[in-house]
Image 1 (cartoon, rainbow, N blue to C red):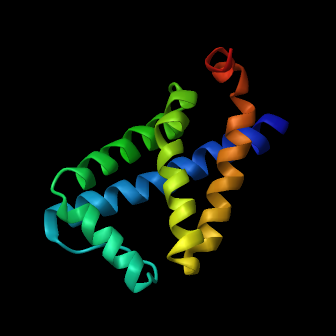
Image 2: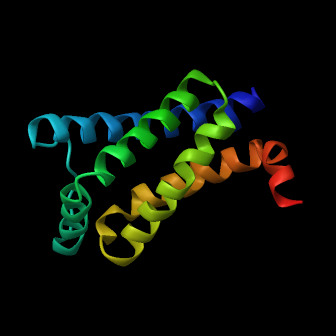
Length: 130
């Protein structure tokens, strides 16, 4: 039961969050409209628009989101999936701390879920810290 609560549930929840983000991002690429779009500040919208208008970064970001999400949900190399989305989570947290405070609950959720998984997979990252 401990494994389920501390690893499986956070792994699946984090995977689902990033899967929804990827699907929404690819939907925007295909249609120019979002399926979901939480309240965003004007500066936040400007940042998102800049990423989308770059022409390369948005598809790259959403591909990373999708790969990390599928890895976590399928439990196939989940430590790699977490490593893929960790930089994205850091940017999301900083984004909400600095220019879009409406999303702080999401940022806190990402920090909690990511921290639980980082601790659970710490043995897999140990070699990187030697």
